[in-house]
Length: 212
Ligand SMILES: CSC[C@@H](O)[C@@H](O)C(=O)COP(=O)(O)O
Ligand SMILES: [Zn+2]
Image 1 (tube, rainbow, N blue to C red):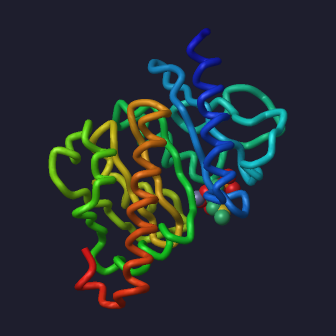
Image 2 (cartoon, helix red, strand yellow):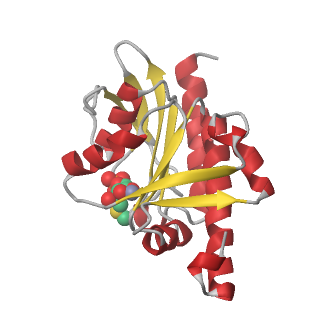
């Protein structure tokens, strides 16, 4: 199977799976996979579409400037510039972005710390093949939201260093990138698990300082 087709199939399946868990409500979320290096080309979900539904054009192909390379009625998502920046700056091959209630709550609770750190959980093994996983904790940066994407890109940039990473935007969801579709999905699931666990613990224990 050629690379383009296999990426397309993997991304369709991940899109379906994540949206069926209600991780893309209100047509939110964006998912992409790199298909060519030089010049950079990637598949990306289309603007404002319900990710649970099958449609004729599940993805569009865009270039390093985030522009469509083929004429069609669909548009790339509003946050395409975040995807193109991550692909230009790193060797990431896939980017998954979802809005969940838990990731939004965590972004609000830990906004002043500008990061959320997870410790003491077996789920941290999900990250064990990356540099972060060599430690027994994982820290996810939290940046302020902005409707001006040039400002949002500026806030992402200090955190876009490796081909694997994640950024939480305050009340705008979590973006995770990695070396392939499967690994990136694993990271996203691990982080969503840890965030959901933390939200429940906070609800029971109340005190942010006592929850690690
Ligand atoms: C709930 S709308 C969220 C959007 O602003 C964006 O962050 C997003 O996730 C998807 O953008 P879209 O262009 O609608 O596909
Ligand atoms: Zn979004």
